[in-house]
Image (cartoon, rainbow, N blue to C red; front, side, top):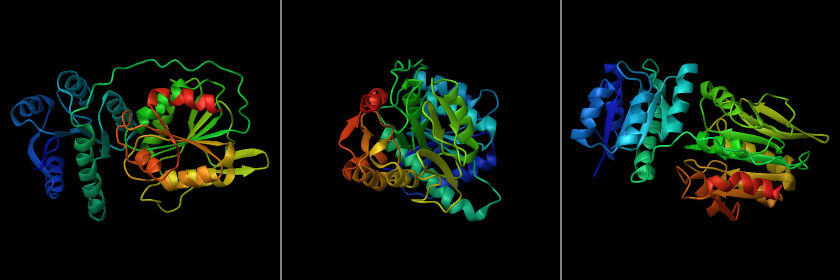
Length: 342
């Protein structure tokens, strides 16, 4: 039986295109469309969809207000359709914090060559939203996370490397906000568009005790700082004398991703070895799982988010299957476990 999808978007052209794309997958069926949240509310009641695609910016009621009400009254899987702009990034990050499963960018109507790749992305995420969230969607309430107390840690040599994808922005936020201000340097690869990575770093920086920023090429990795890979470049860690340095690279995608967790973890295995702590958080696919094995072989200690607290147990599940780490850790306990290891 096909997964029933309701499309909510104020653009008739986008509604038509999304309908054609989603219906091209035999596992999916568009059962209706709505041009505004009020029409969507009525169609949800009558059509009972399994998954929504929701435009970020709409007339009459914005997507965030609609999503907040939906998650309070009738939680269900939602894939956001976001514009690749600074405002679109901020609103989409708000949506993810409220419980949206994931997002895709608005299709570029004039770029025919990218349509196949876009079709695969949106159909995969709609199916994953249904498979991973059906029956367990809950509205997330804003919360203040208290960082662990400073403990005068020996942080000059330790490096923490974090990889994440779907659900990762919220998981990373929770981990970083719980870390003390004197935590070891942290390097992060999150699958995210280039237009979003800086906004994401700025958002977490305003919440965490650590300094959080988008990584820059040649930047020294310092205690008390977290560095997030730009959304269009790979992030490496290299060693220069006694210092660890961020290196950015505009190479080809690895495992179909740029930035790739595989690239980051491989560089950490080579350059940091036993001084590294690896952390694999929620995400679709297997990016980084095999490189995490190489981190362990190089002497790193690796932590893997458990299935119960993962939005998608793809990347963490693969890392566990390959034997990259023996410890499965709930998200809420991850920062505490990292600090205990340090």
